[in-house]
Image 1 (tube, rainbow, N blue to C red):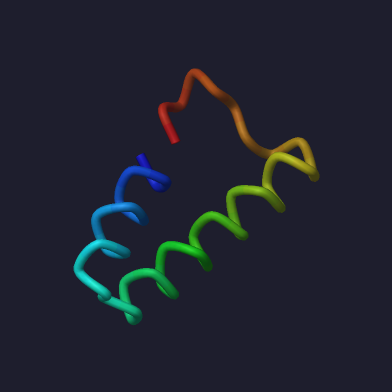
Image 2: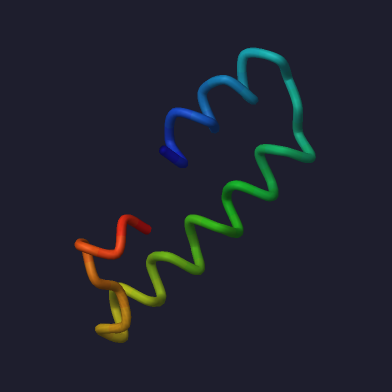
Length: 43
């Protein structure tokens, strides 16, 4: 979902949205690294 939204924001040159999504992706990566992410949660 995040990557799809980044593509849409990129095509619109919506840099604020791209930055927001990148931060969300970074937080998700940290959760995965720390073992807090569960795939069945749909996040």
